[in-house]
Length: 115
Length: 112
Image (cartoon, rainbow over all chains, first blue to last red; front, side, top):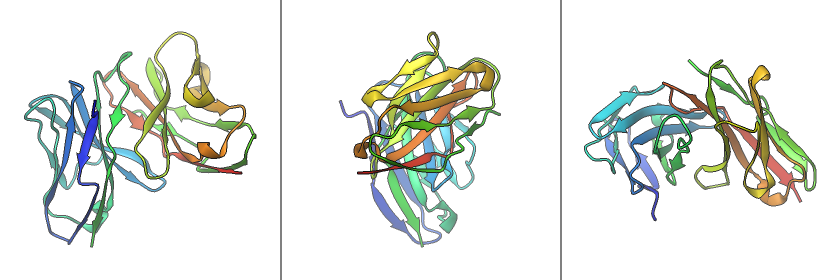
């Protein structure tokens, strides 16, 4: 059981470039999330999805876009990379958002540097 | 909006010392509470969770946490830490209608 798989693990972008961070889960979870982790700031929610075809903004959505065409995949798109987007990005999924099955399972993370 | 506070940003302990990490949240209604651990270079893993029932929750690796509703707290404890417990610990909360919200994290270093 692979769980949540993120690619790539590391990436360096130049200012203004674009890229897509891939995320896939094989647990048939309805909910998927993208977080960014900055030192001392914990994890901030960028976007989330409650099911295929449905996405919504989290706490820090500016500069990012997402799509959810299938239950399994939830890619995160950076259109015009900026130094402020240098961070570690985590994708996560859960079966529910509230109740006993709300445990979030995390991917290994993508360390992105924008120079 | 709900918020989560972890007041200890860095904690340094010697092996066998007892650990207590504080976590307070702002939401007054029914909540689900979690502690996650992130070992160096790894992703977040669930230590324990509280959904309902006994407010004293036991997790993996000897960790436990106590939900005190009147204090809006969910502190993490371990009676005797080991060097392998060196990691960053995150408290997280969600409630109906809100996604999982994380605290700022506490970096624990255990000296051998």
